[in-house]
Length: 430
Ligand SMILES: Cc1cc2nc3c(=O)[nH]c(=O)nc-3n(C[C@H](O)[C@H](O)[C@H](O)COP(=O)(O)OP(=O)(O)OC[C@H]3O[C@@H](n4cnc5c(N)ncnc54)[C@H](O)[C@@H]3O)c2cc1C
Image (tube, rainbow, N blue to C red; front, side, top):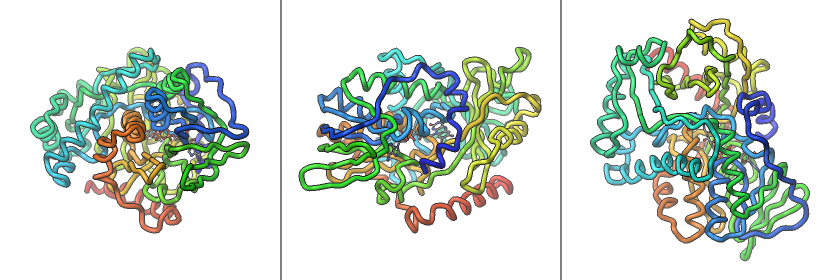
């Protein structure tokens, strides 16, 4: 997966082009010890490292590439409170009381991230302007109405409302039949957020080693050892925060997620006379293979989506995204695309994240396309569990998804089948 990810072009991304200066980090060489070793410098790993360091633990983070090199530094930047499973389905599956506890915890991620950004002075173009879900078909509206009712009446979440067809035309220059607005949502520059988090981690006394992939994890009764190419760490606790890229380091954990490649493009800054999104919302639609977009701080459309059946990246990512972008916004057909890149979204069978613990080894992954803020929460919950407070981790463990059949070996064929099925649903309107 690491080799594949490196073909997905983060260096050509809008985020890399507008990133805050990188932090000086070195490769791990020789022997090291720590209370907590973290594998992965995305938001899950960094949030875990920050909380553990602030609780007084010695912490070392190992990153195989560069900080923010995974999904955290290349995603759509959409802040969408909650979980990928709807509030309505949570209630149906787990009952109102349990669902509400889960929903409260998940949505608390939004305020926690906003507070972190403010406390640490992270410059990441944060916009708390709301998240819109655009309904493609009339038949999508009853589901959105049901969801808003559930959020307001069962979850006591007052920020979501239904937007009718006329109001939707005022919001987005694209013909949706209506939609749902969640004023708890918004967007940000995810790479700069991740880099800001990393800066806070270092300020809290932890070490981050980039270009230091963990290649072997071994356990004895007293300690856990993580081997890299040029060194190793012996630690009391290990946090696995590698998400789609963790791969073979621990197959028992990787078999719970399927990495699905997804591609994003940013246009050149739009001409002043063109407004596509009126109130600077983050927008996604009701398709199974979701289209999602928003404006950047410098006036470009950042658009993600489109289905691809093979796991290999397209040779020209801009050309791949363009037809999906232009189908949504024909009024900017032919516009220059300045940046295009891809990333791996880790999806679980239930679309709920997979958090867990096996003795001294803890993990969190599989946010199923809704990890921009959830990953920061999950990382902190893992550190809390090490520090003796397992309440948050246990709540997530109560909804753990099942693994994929056939483990990691069948993920390629399953990916193709899943994409065919999802895109067929979109075409025939199931
Ligand atoms: C294209 C795309 C668009 C998305 N859009 C959105 C969105 O708009 N809103 C939203 O909420 N979510 C979105 N997501 C999902 C979100 O980005 C992820 O859920 C979240 O970033 C996961 O964070 P993480 O820290 O767990 O994983 P990552 O950010 O992937 O971090 C894992 C890190 O671990 C490192 N690593 C892995 N294995 C090893 C190893 N063996 N040794 C050392 N290091 C290792 C990797 O190099 C990587 O840096 C999107 C994802 C993608 C790919």
